[in-house]
Structures are given as structure tokens and as C-alpha cells.
Length: 174
Image (tube, rainbow, N blue to C red; front, top):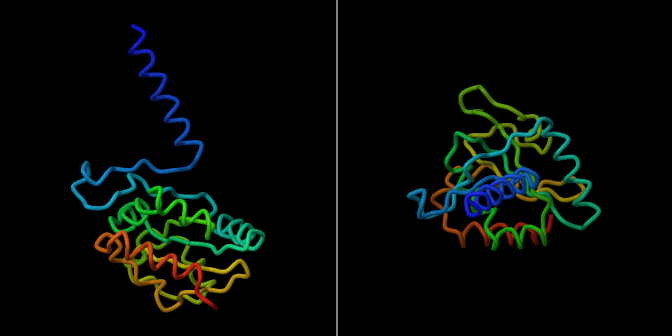
């Protein structure tokens, strides 16, 4: 009787911690059939523009950059990138260099886009696929204009390739 109660209590605590921290549940590579961790859900904010503005303020105050990931739940590349970003290796690097913000963009390729004004704010007029990764200084300057919309193959990129690019963008001169 005690064991089922403890199991239930542990499950409730874990669920509350995940909900309170805003993290997505991950499917491990061996569970998903992929060689990358995949986020089970890509969170959607009620006010993505305010989330970006708050991240910019934190980035300016902490001498970091904003890592703005614009993707969607339906997109396996978005979920793959989100999954990598939640691993310990990435989380430590991100905490040291970035303020991370996920923004749902819906399906911009089919005319059902959301929050596209955020990309336009940084001079990105078209999102040809998902995800898109914008690295922005605390002062609001886009660091990676040439590569921001090239992440639609995130699921096929290696962990090291993604990690090295994000480290490089954290240090890139504007």
C-alpha cells in the first residue's frame, strides 16, 4: 500500500515541477526511434512579443544574448532542436550565454503563421521553414541574419554541429 502511494506522490511532484518550470517533457532517443532527444511538446505563449521583450531586458542586464527559437509543435525539426536545448550540455551553455525564448509560428509556409511580426522586427521578412533561430544582442541587434532561417534541418544536424554553432553565435561580433 505504501509503495503505490509513494509512486503516485513522486509522479505528482514531478508533474508539478515540470509544469512550474515551463519545461517540455522529452522523449529519449532510444524511446523515440531518433538519434536526437525530441521535445514532446513545444510550449505556446499567450504573449510571445512580451516574452521576447522580457528576454531582451534580461539579456541587456546580464550581458547575454537572446536565443529566439521560432518553431512549432507539428514540426519534428522544431521538437528536435528544443529537445537538444533541454539536455544538460546545452542547458549549461545556454544559461551562461543566452536568454532562451521559444515562439510558436504556426505554419507560415501554408499561410497560417503566428507571431511573424517578431521575425519582421529583426528584418526577417519570410520564414521558409521551421524552426528559425535568431540570436539577438541585448541591444536588439540580430547577430545571425545570414543563418537565422537555415535551421529547418535541425533534426538531421549533429549534436556537436548545433552546439558549436550556438557557441560561435554567442561570441560573434556584431
